[in-house]
Length: 243
Ligand code: NAD
Image (cartoon, rainbow, N blue to C red; front, side, top):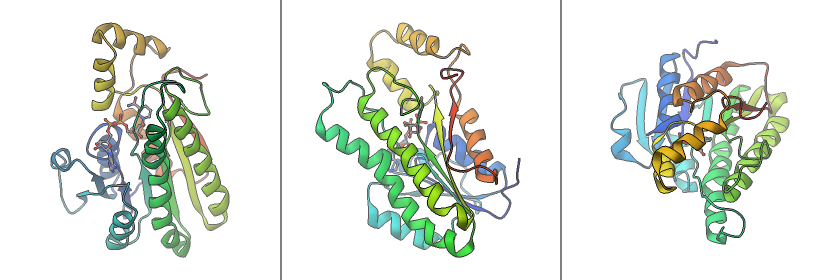
């Protein structure tokens, strides 16, 4: 795997779950990491140092995103990890939920990408990694309408940016996990009835027989940061849910 020594990485939603594991994996790969989130209490649990800066950044706030990125200097790798899951099908879905899902799952990425791209173009180098899901254009998953619509849009955004900037040596790829252990997964399991029964059903969807770990997804994020011959792809990492 390529070393990320000397690279600056910006991770959104880095206080917990996949974002946190990825911030730590980028750090272990030698990068200087800006780990951002709105949950400052959880960010405080990261091992802050010169090489790992934890900072509040609300990706819904365009001015804050632009200001933050202007303030930290050149970003070599952007990992857009922020996202929210709304349960329910199309008849349950409120317009406000769909709007919010677009704002947090898609437009947040448009904001961060717009802020880092001019510098990447100038330096003729950069890697952008967007968090999608197999619940998207990859696979129809029941009761995930707002989520799947917006995670499919993430794949469209990824391919569009990849096509427009491949000649500038900037790569843009998407990660499509199956079910991964995280605080929000625990909330979803508890919210849906008997915890053990619901958990068993989630495990049964993954042919590999278990739920993924944030560290397994983080490994793919680090790989994509340095994978200099791939762009415009949506990488499923899902215990065999999609084969
Ligand atoms: P999580 O859902 O437990 O944590 C999400 C983090 O996002 C929290 O720390 C929260 O504070 C932060 N956040 C929320 N709003 C924010 C905002 N406006 N600005 C900045 N940060 C904000 O973590 P997770 O389950 O690992 O999910 C991370 C990403 O992975 C999401 O995009 C999710 O859709 C995607 N994903 C997760 C799974 C899974 O099973 N866990 C599967 C596929 C895709």
